[in-house]
Length: 351
Image 1 (cartoon, helix red, strand yellow):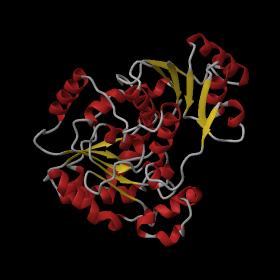
Image 2: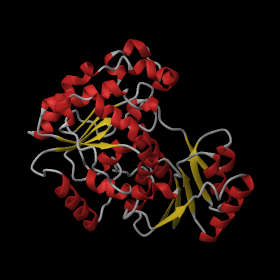
Image 3: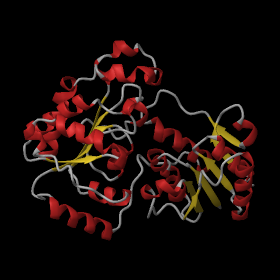
């Protein structure tokens, strides 16, 4: 049996959909499993033992209906028996349909029922739905036998050794090291600068031996520096701002050596969880906490959301309906609300 799993992008989603691959290969280790992703997301699936082959989807190359149809016909050469489309956009639906696979599985929409042989209706009102819905897709093919709780990232010994060497050159390995997800992927997924600075001051005050590393994209350096500048001088002394990593795999290796990850919800937090690193996550007011809040145990993985403190704002409505109000609502998510659980988290990790 030869299976193609499709999840073109984003990094967090590509990582999450590896649970489909793991579920299938755990039950049927003799099946051949291919995974379609965009090249920019390779780092989170590299060396994954449950993936036999990576198929790259290049958006610039496969742009437009005719190109997508042609790409799907190219996939026919692989003679896939089944395709599971976790992405669920036309960029994946069309190649999946024209792949020639007898079994084509995806989420149910009025048009996917015409193009897929089997569709699923994602379960509602369940914790960790981002993973649960992907497992539904896998179980449609292999049955309800999954024991996968969260995806994993697989680093090589050489990558870990190199990261340890880099850390030893710039940091004191006898002191705790916390990675800070100082900025999200956009302004409406990032705690405002002043509030993030206050949060960092709380972390530093809770334990003055902690070394803080900032995680941000190269084009976010000015924003990250503004947060650094807004911190108290004592906090700045604990921040190692010039600790740079080249490439996502290098970042992952360094992250694997940290004691914890604290900050904005996003791909970096999910990578930390996939590396078994404790996390304290601050959710954006418009992101649904229950969807991505996997592994929460109030000890190793803690998450906070405005809805936890001001449920009257949401009045039972889904968080996504508040996207346009995100920046105003962020102002209500003040650090004093989550200061106590944050300090408790720090004490547990550093004790």
